[in-house]
Amino acid sequence: MAYAAGEARQDLLATVAEATDALAQALAALGAAYEQLDEQSADRLEERLFRPVQVAYGRAKRTHAGFAERHGLAGASFEPATAGLPSQGVKGFLDRALEAVGEADSILAELQDSMMPVEVGDAELRAGLAEVRELIGGVAAQGREFLRTFGR
Image 1 (cartoon, rainbow, N blue to C red):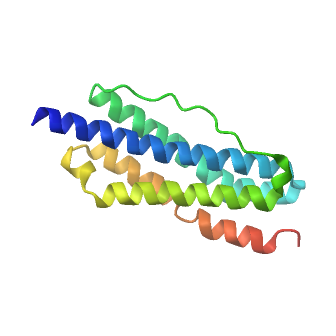
Image 2 (cartoon, rainbow, N blue to C red):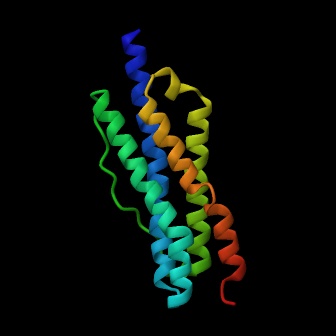
Image 3 (cartoon, one colour):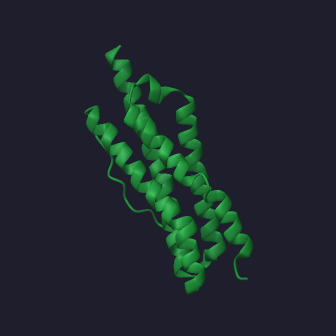
């Protein structure tokens, strides 16, 4: 039974890392979009999109590290992601960022629905996952709104 619990914890940790990597991709794309915007649009992007994703990324990393430490597992070192070619333009970067945020949210939703976080009995992990999802919950709508009004 201990092996099954240990394996489940390792799988859970890997899944949290996958979602965290998706958030890193989103941050890289948002940063690249920011660099191509005028000051007013950049400030709006930072406030509505970049900041919530940045906070969620930090929370996901802390959740991952805390869970690994509490259960004696090897944590991950999260490397900055690359944004891609500047020729994608602002719209391309924003599309990529929103796709990555959606991927992270889907990964975490599936993990929460699996009941694995409950089965391993880690309340801090469950709280961290819920917080990350709450932080990124409005990003898709904000991103669509930003794209809709971009350039006006």
